[in-house]
Length: 237
Image 1 (cartoon, rainbow, N blue to C red):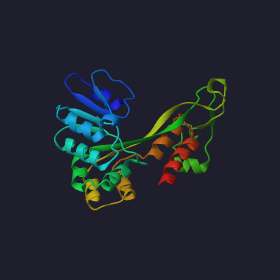
Image 2 (image 1 turned 45 degrees about the horizontal axis):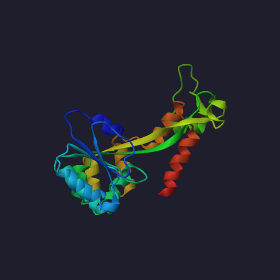
Image 3 (image 1 turned 180 degrees about the horizontal axis):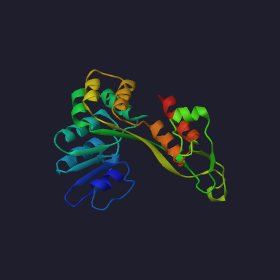
Image 4 (image 1 turned 90 degrees about the vertical axis):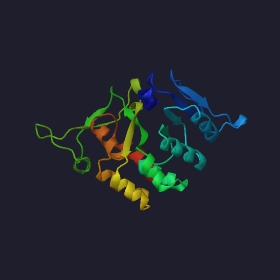
């Protein structure tokens, strides 16, 4: 929805297909899926393509047919946004391959993949600073401050403001895979998700764990919370 809001200008015709419509955005035509009248993602996509939209958002690509229509829409000049349930950004590429989308279609239509997870945000009223261990200093690549000391990390404590949980609200840990020529070659060569991840990192992708650790250093969350979320992702793999 944040991306749609950025794209939502008076000169763009934006249509969405969602199940359900979770957030109404003024100026955007949002269509809810209705299985009772056979209005599936695929059928709704076929209908809205006849309306010549500039931007299409598909709530989720659940099957090969929806993925195929979405790819064809991108090939014909439409900007297409969608979601897939995968563990990280590189796995979205292999998921499309598993849905029998041809490699050349993936490499010619995908501009980028953004993956995100939620971590709990430290309560600003009770978080406690502590000196990181040498292992954490090395792991996080922490640089000394001007006085030679290491920047502090923070731990959850708990207070009335956060119902004694130590956390208040959430923030995201993200990774953005941007398509480039090395990735295109690897996709055509049938590289697995690990191989794609390595190439993406070499070309500047900051993975979710690294992004989360940066947020821990900034005092937004804890190292333990980041590791909990990332470990859950790795175990799912």
